[in-house]
Image (cartoon, helix red, strand yellow):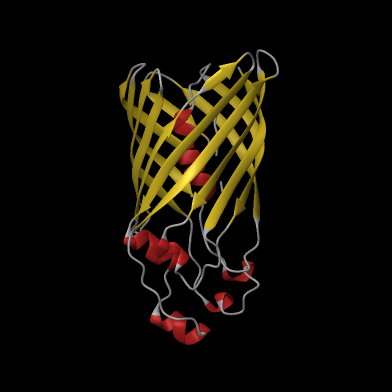
Length: 248
């Protein structure tokens, strides 16, 4: 199974997909993703989500991310990876007149290292990645502990984690420049780096040898650096995805 705005959906895909233990080399599916953004009076985003998983001893591809294993055994998996991060801000998607005067923030691609360490008590998942398209020039580090429980056809994986975003990352998506402040009437804002803790839950149910349904979600408590932005009116952000897959 793979998981998950196709960074919003990207963080859940580019990080939580690393939890997947592929039961076969290849699976296909489709789903829908919902993103609750913290921007003021911003439309809830609903996206179709392609679910494509491929796993070999050397390469993997899951959702919006793909990578090459530098180390791969049952206990430890270290890889270099790249992932599409569609997190963005479109001024026209906000009903707030001040936010409609701001500049657009673009989606980007992130690349870096991911690592998983499996134990009998759960597993550690971490990923460090940076913007490679020169949009935010930001860096994101994700660290989580998860536990996979299986009962027959049902598998449930709860987790707790934290995401660190660099000052460049926060400035690009939540900062307000002086020119934007003059144009919009908002206060200018230049955030530092920040830590955002989150809770995550994934569940999948095996309908047959080939067909499965899944659901995955994440609730993130935003860092003070994000919450204090004049672009934001919420202390949290939410992600949800559900769909069906076919394993070959």
